[in-house]
Image (tube, rainbow, N blue to C red; front, side):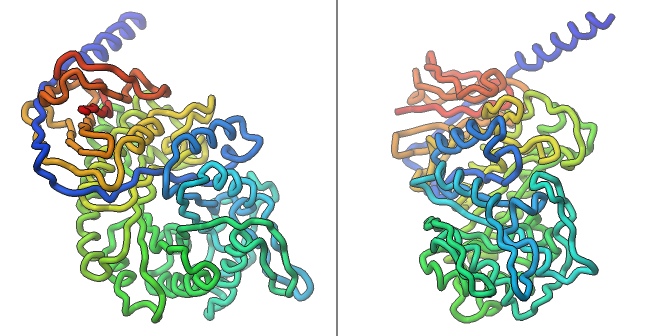
Amino acid sequence: MKRLLVACTVLLSTSIYAQTDTCKITIDWKAVVTESKTTATLQLVENPMVRPGSPIHTNTFKALKELGADYVRYVPWFPYPKMAVAELQPPAANKTFWDLTYLDSTMQAVMEATKGHSTVINFSTTPAWLWKTAKPVQYPADPYGLCWDYNQGTQLRDTTMQELTGYYARLFSWYTKGGFTDELGVFHKSGHFYNIPYWEVLNEPDLEHHIPVELYTKMYDAIVFELKKLSPQTKFVGLSLAYVRDPAYFEYFLDPKNHKPGIPLEGISYHHYSRPAWPQQTIDEYQYAFFDHAESFLDKVRYIESIRKRLAPQVFTMINEIGVILRSPSESGPIHDHYWNLAGAMYAYIFLELTKLGIDVAGESQLVGYPTQFPDVSMMNWENGHPNARYWVLRLLKENFGPGDQLLKTSIKGKGNHLAAQGIITKQGRKILLINKHNSAVTVVLPSEAGNAVVNQSDILTGENPPAKTTLSGTTIVLKPFAVAIVDCK
């Protein structure tokens, strides 16, 4: 009976993949709809699995270097205080407690792997002692010990913000000026003289410390005022919101009159994660929930863009965490092999739509996750160190598309309502981006100029391997479930 059930399941699965809709793509290569400003990139979050000594450390930074992306976002994050906070205790009368041992090693690896490319650095975790708390916040002695309740307090203990800005000025100087002078006048030498083109001010303040926009804006102004003295050329990114459901946060922060004179408004950022509609959903149901969430998010992006253009049109936008979260980091559960392709297809679709909206940066989240650290968001297999389909989709997009590309008028006819397609003129020539958002195959009839074209495709068969490269025989292509393909018409 069990064998019969397995056999039936396999046959059903095979039949689903074999069923194909058919649609036809039409592209007017002379009708430019918009010009791209968008760069595809990713974020790397500090955690034990990315550090020296990890079994996947070498492969992780090899993958990052080979990607060659700009605007790579690096975030030392609060669950590991010793790896995220440079001064875990307040200065005493005769002693300070600066220790950047753990912060340095991953920062160095990031800067080495991204050499020649821009980075967005965000030491987002403020020392807990900067905040009013009922008692001192405890943290593990083990630097790899988790501490999900480190971010306590909602009011700064020093309302002048001199403690806050002093912390960030010294941290910034450690990495850009070769060292800093501490609160007691002692110089600490680092030997680091990194160029940091972008610095993001805090992370998800709507969640971390639940900071209201008025306080966040004051913190942003104070930090930027001090860091601009040290590095006038560095551009600063504000907000970094987890949720985009409150327009008031954008209305307030983007209004120049709410900032101190001389404080530049240069960039904003915010995040998106699709989620299952309920915990017991299957891979066949995920596809609808994920893309429904994506569509809802894109509607919010359009509204936020209207606010930005009205109040601060000079400000660039980075949507620098894009992914899917299946469950909380403390929960475990199986992840379907094809999930990675589905999540990759969703990122590709959001990237395409953000390109149409004129967003500057579309950052996939995140390079390394694993059990207890959002495994479903990972772009690396934490067991064998191989990049998964989410990484390969990002790399496919990054290597083919970028700012200056022209998006052409593209139409789809037929039954393939789960297909996304876009004709694009790039520096390398004419290309067609195809995204199958569904867990079934779709047959696509391409324009005549795509006849016998080369196709690079990431799908459920390529898995953790690089995209497959094939040559069309004619103008018809069959896209496998959750495939992302680029047709090179040159």
